[in-house]
Image (cartoon, rainbow, N blue to C red; front, side, top):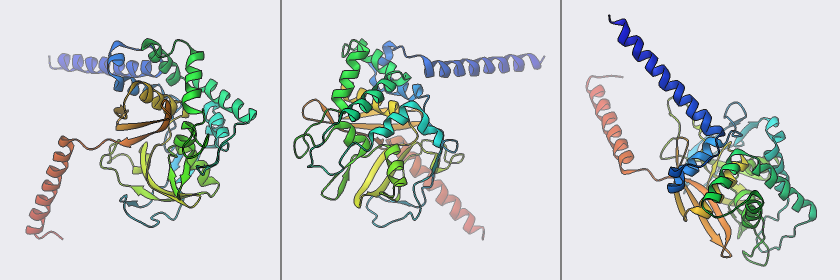
Length: 336
């Protein structure tokens, strides 16, 4: 009579696993907005993460070579090799990636020089936004903003995205900057890099020999299980680098995420969140920072690893104490 309860339990567990799998599959395709997500904006951000089916997988689509970790105040080059070992060429045939890459050479890196937008560049912006708007994360963003009464239609969302990201504004002189240029492409002022939070732009500039990777900043918390996964597989990386000879001592970027996910996330945070937005992106606790400029434009938006909680800090201390006790015990036994 022992078999029956065990068999029943096995079936129950199997049903639970199937239900979980179905739920996750639904999250990847369903762009409808729940009441909970309308009330809790961080749940909406998490949905965007699940809807990013165009995200790349480490080891399959790209490989990082992090080399030596460092602290943010460490000077010097801790990495003799590039950050990206390789990225699969197929990635750049994907529509949003291809359109995104075409935008990267449209800007002057130094602030204080007015930008001009040619008809070709305007057409590239339109193509990029159209491809993004067809994606899961952007369809969800539209549904969310419509329920919030922020936009009414796809056409209105497209205009909003264009104004937020591509309209030029003044950082030092008239029309020398835009949200897209700052956040995704990067800018240089007084020999310091500002913005440049797109992993695709980092890869692009590294490939051209303009980007010098100096090492990664060791995280206080891992998103993946450290026993199973290498540090290279983490999807949130904080690094130090030089771009065109200018330094950025600390810079955090998502790695392998799609351009449509990043633009949807930062737009949602900008329109519905505050200056600091604590969110969960898969297994990552992230603070998305947003700063306004010129009243209603994106000055900057980027991810940072969330500070460790009191519970996590206490757990780290307990672990350290246990390790020390075990080492003392071992040394008293005369271990080698």
